[in-house]
Length: 397
Image: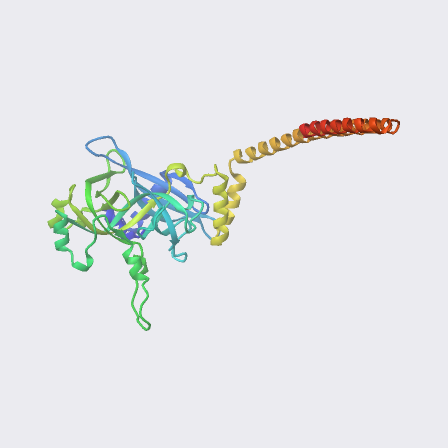
């Protein structure tokens, strides 16, 4: 994440001292939970919060992104700050806007909209991104979503929010859109030159009614405090969203408005954690089609995930391989049984045909020795025998 966003968690003191920041992230990397991605490795370190004097519960999440350097040695590449929460959105991928030259393996930024719909256009930074098999356009992903505030305003009511907001910037209630991405990528008249800061691609304009607001005190342990920040849950067109920001980001005259029912208008950065549901422990090989999706993504994206995929596929749980062997054994056994049954049927048909030939030969000999009237009688008999044989043959088939 951008180090500038540390201030949204009241942790800007880390940005003032590189040694302190390095020590903090190193401690998180040593004590966190390791999760393997296809190309990157993540260490998730959780810090607790205490609400209403209850016991500490995991809340703040430090995610360390570790991957191999050119020499093959694992090293810390970057880190993110996230929050545990219950807002899980199902989203449809439109495209990636990850800048491969400025990010590390395992970091991904997506352009998305609502799953099964065409509504909205958002840019989302994916946490623990490399555990998912593919990010091809059209695929759907489930992410645990939060917003990290760049700028916030709290108004007593929607009417006050409308009154204080210039007409061209008024947003509908529940509105969310990647307006900065659209601004940065709009087609300009020929000859027009404009300075564009593409680092703002993920700034999202949002407005919503406040449902809940908390002041979180994050603890390193039972005795030592790490930081304090505000957490607000608002209603949006995509679903409920938890937004984190520091106390200092709230304007002095608006601090009494941080309560349910007030009108929140702001600019945020969206983050979505992939480490949930069936991917809560990292890469999943339970479903073969997911492996194939990953392989397809490797070929299409032409990146180093291919080598990692092959290595992991070789080492993967033997259940899939065993299931395949059992399936092959069952098919071979079934094939043998079917072949045996066919041989028995063919043998029976051959015996039946032989018996029919014998009967017809005897009938021909008898007919030659009889007069015409008797021949006609035996012809009728022969037809009846042929009908009978045909019926028996049809039954056997």
